[in-house]
Amino acid sequence: MTDGEDEFNSISELLSRAHEVDYQSYTGQFVRSSYELVRRYAGGGLSIGRSLAAIFDLTVTALYMENLLRSKWYFCANEKTQRAVYPFVNTCPSCALSGEFAYIEAGKPPSAKIGKATSVILAAILDLQAKYLKGENYRVCTIDDNGLVDACLIGEKSIGLFEIKSAPLVAFPLMVPLHRESEFSDCGPIVNAALSEHVSMKAPDDYDAFMLIDENLSIPVGSPGEFGLGEHYRRILEWLSIEENFRKFVESWTQTFNGYAVPSLRGNTFWLTNGCGVPTPRPESWPQRRPSGGGYASISDGKSSVGMDRTDDVKKGIYQVIKISTHYKEFFPSEGWEVSAALVSNIHAVKHHENYLKELEDVVWTIDGKGQSHVVDRDQTHVLIERPKLHNLFDGIIAFTKSYFRDDFLREIYDFNV
Image 1 (cartoon, rainbow, N blue to C red):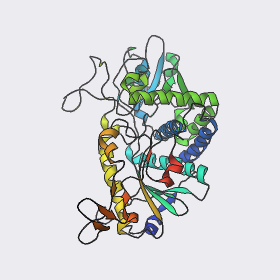
Image 2: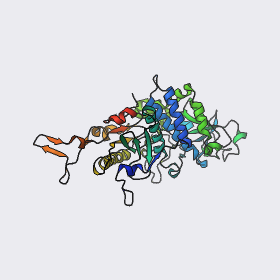
Image 3: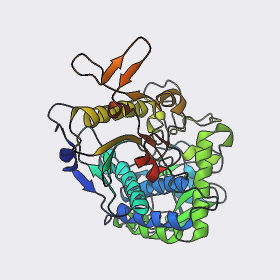
Image 4: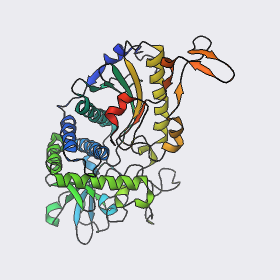
């Protein structure tokens, strides 16, 4: 914690800053309705965990759509089609899904407008999961900025304290079909553009847009001019409520995730994912990295890696869970609560789990110092520790795609593979 921040030296002080999930917001309504669809349609070979991870990405994309940068639409054409595209990574999504690469700048909304929205979306899904399995007396709340805990699961006698590291696998790009030159000649400087060029254009507010999921699947989202009004949430849910559509969407997301995890399984959708790197094969025209010019520009660099799969996030997350545990299990009163501490994300550390987390999964700790010690006896071969004072480093490492537990309170709710 930094100077000037509240100490939060008890669970009651922490809970005084807790906020229940707002299900009246666009994203809150969308998450709740989507979770109901997961419970209705998942199963029969369709994983609940993967379904929730896919819904997380869809919700984040819908939130991005509320805050699109009007200057980040581009004209894309070939001999057969003309379209406007909006990318969330630095390549034309239409070309990438065709197996080609054209560098254009991503249009992610400014972080100030998105803030901690991904953590709030994740907390909403975790809240709905707890209520579904344990009833309305269980809830997940987010915590006002405190430098220590992002969210908490509140049970009857137990409380789970969460450090959240979340980021989508893919923010699905947008596309607007442009059928005749006369229809789009007023949308920007594109009339004289060669078919191979990608030029910026005016936002096509009066046309119907689609969210690109893969080469063969797209979701109608309505007019870009209505995104700020939240109309696209309704359209996405309308499409998703059809079971065949829901299954196709989750299956497509799962294929993209499998390609992220295993290079030999990568398809064209890999180049829409966060942290995908420099295109392979790289076109001769692909630009060099700016401003130094050393190496080549990335479609999406490692700073945007998915879930908790970024080395800095993993390392910070490990420290934060240790800090949460020592703070609320040892040094300040838990006031009768059974306290659990967990690292939480939408996607586990696919690429970095073995090197950063695997060896720590079963680590336990206690206090053994000159001023305070929970060691009650020791000899040359044995150390005897008070059982209530022997704590897990991680009570849980929780993600929709893969989790690890040393705590039944968390396992009973968040083992998504059961």
